[in-house]
Image 1 (cartoon, rainbow, N blue to C red):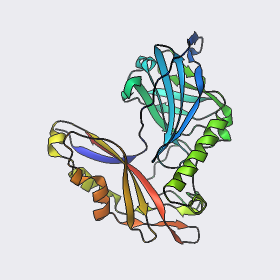
Image 2 (cartoon, rainbow, N blue to C red):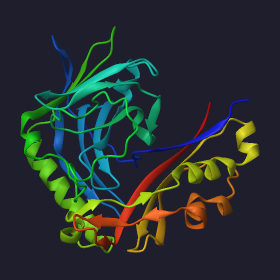
Image 3 (tube, rainbow, N blue to C red):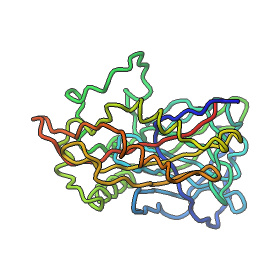
Image 4 (tube, rainbow, N blue to C red):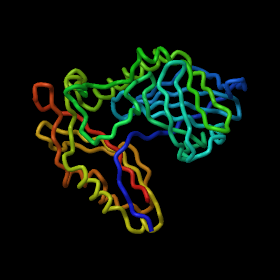
Length: 308
């Protein structure tokens, strides 16, 4: 019997409708998928999503960029039947070319509704020398050297991105011809700025935040959430994901906690909702400006229940 663990991570996705597409081509550099139609940008209550459809009729592929909180990285997903060619749990590499972010990741066998199999990862779009750097320390980020502010994707750097290459040994690469990425990324940043406003925060004030809210007893919170996982679900090996956004007041109090997205284990006891655990036991240091003044701000986290 495996043990349940709770960890804190990035972002989730929502489904998107399909479209009719022209043919793609197979060239020397892999299977090339041209775009169909314009980018689609949507602001939901809790997220911004940028999407475009690629490929062929009968083999549609969608590319999605999504954020639930402002940041210099975003969760992206490529979904469609053509993704079946990539083996799950076998290392892949990606490259936003010709001069954008690149790296390696391991697909987990994700899927996206009617689109079917998907690969997903979190990264910048533009090149970032600090992304995926080796770091052997567990130190807190240095918010003096790198203030939080109101982070966003690098739209200017995205001007060097025109395609996304997905590669895995023994498989033909899949190449999405994204087109010039600076304009859609800039529009995405505007969406996130407007989203912060819709939550009741002043983006100008949030830009002055040096250090974000910090849960000072996160190990205790995570342990309590883990202990509340239903035993019946644990015996069946079921899993659950919760993505939360907390509004943190100037004294560190939780003013609000919203469930943004979830994948729920069967018969999960909602009286054990992670929001309740945060409200009951979390000790939180409020966001502060460079001068040390507390600022009402937001804190987002994703709690994953997984079986070891």
